[in-house]
Image 1 (cartoon, one colour):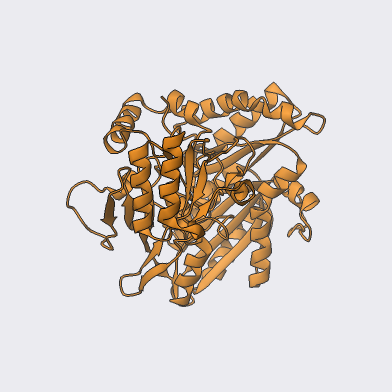
Image 2 (image 1 turned 90 degrees about the horizontal axis):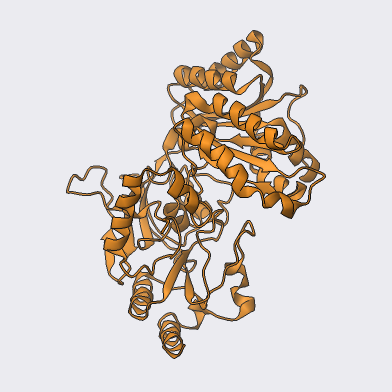
Length: 471
């Protein structure tokens, strides 16, 4: 204990009073786990002001054997930023500088503590677009987005965080700083080390800054809300839209009726955009950075043809920014609405696009065969194959009793995902929540390689202990 206290004293001196939190009240917001599935503790919350301070903190922890749990905006959903009592939480909120914007190279260099929304605004001020968009963008940090390889609404067009990143700066587990802040799109000099750290959830090092890609600002954006007859019809419509618009679809969201009913009943000032009820809905967005290319007419004609063919029951195009925002508010309010109607068992999965309808049919049948009262609530970014296949507790069941069946329902759903060639984690990461799934579904050779990388970079296992890799 004396050794731990001595190391903590060194850490406090390193970051100063502005970067040190150890009282229960001050630490509480950092210890709260978003879903309430894990209990987080920490010897202290340490908030360095710059990369050199991060390196000094990591070096002290390396020498003292103190576990380090990197943390961004604490919006993660898999327990990846949960600490134990003899570990520190390393929160990067003070490292929030935008270091450079290079419009000629279409890049922005930012520190890990920058809020995603601030990066989006900085890009907009430069007449550019940073396309990562997720519901938590007002509170999540770029470092966390990188650590979990965040996805979101626009992956279909722009890719996930791995695709949006050219270079990273990382503090390694022994305190060394790797300056990998390359702004190059072509660099064939050996292993591409950035990809080791993106998606590693802080288990291999601490990402402190990154060079991110920018894109031309969208000059025209068409947003539609439509009632679709079935998921299979939705996937055919996606193919038609992509072909007709030259791959300009940025978002393609599938939403079940139950999810909307949850929103309408719990979220104030929300209403159904359509007059015709349906089992399934689509939120579609198509955009271009060029001059007016008749995009709205193209989308309108495709939807009209689908209505005439009976593939759509109803559809409406947003005629203003406020109406567009109303459409997206329905989609982004689903997780909050689910919390308000009771306990939920979540599945963040992906399957090949061709298997989306099969997955939805098989998974729904399998879970309702166990208990017909379970309220199945699927929605998500089906344009890239990502489905949030969530289960809400039966109205006549205790929420905690329902949560006790989490592992059982996981096995049912994830077995189907695996059979269809999918992934049990599409965009939320592994954290602690899905370690057992890694052991069950991940290729053994892949796991062996991951363990070898972990041993090579972090032999003392101080970086985010107990996350991602099964023992």
